[in-house]
Length: 146
Image (tube, rainbow, N blue to C red):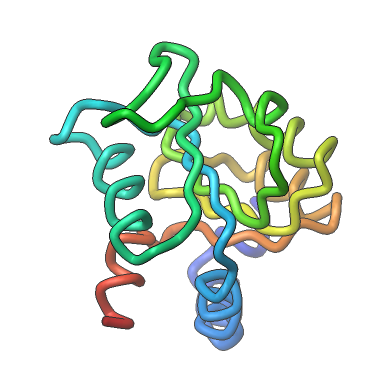
């Protein structure tokens, strides 16, 4: 098992995690992969809260052409502006393509929502030089910071 996914590994990582989260939340260009129109789902709540906090957010979901009037892109590769951070709200089977696309686009930060990652996805992203947050929910972290 990956050291980062063990309790000891996570506790060691916790020492630098707050710094990384703060660094990411200072970035203003975000994509939410798995954004949705369903107001009860986390993909909607995350997209909406980032917008409310005045982040420039692009919804990524091949099912929709828009969410609340905002254009939605089918994949990260379809976005025509620079994205600094990607929040992932899709199952690990779909997150694999997101990680591959993030590597191609040289995206610097990925935030895996709980339940969206595997050990292999984390390692793949980190081996490509991407800074990764996992286990933590961005909704909780944004609310902790006001």
